Length: 162
Picture 1 (cartoon, rainbow, N blue to C red):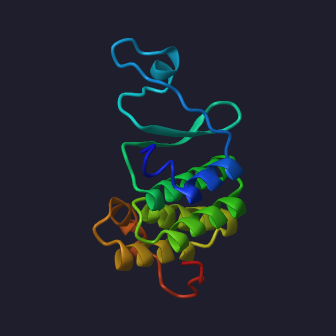
Picture 2 (picture 1 turned 30 degrees about the vertical axis):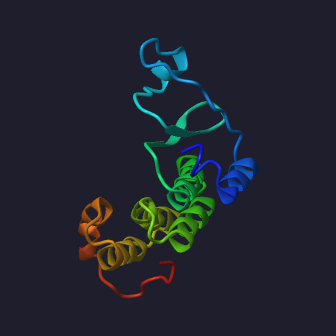
């Protein structure tokens, strides 16, 4: 990934502006304490942590630059989501699937956008919108299957977030 994804200028700019990066050598024959703490079993492993060191998002294996940017933005979204900041989380989830609609993390972002908006507004229509967006745009995704229960929510008064 160093020669493809991490050397990409957009990825470098995003990491520099949004994160405090830490790169660590790994040894599978003599694992370091941090490798054990975070259960690093393959490289590359990308972790997005909060200030207390709690992992908010994890990604394992090579991904191309667009997917890496989507994963980094999803990590930012999960940071806000887990902190209970639904408005900020929604904005980041929205960015993932609007800016990277064909990326691996896009369906997960759609799912969580529906959940974050529901938690923010208490309107079930956000969950239904997530289901509709997932079933139309990402029908084979795991996230579409996770949202299938939301198909029972009436379509009336759907928000325009997705």
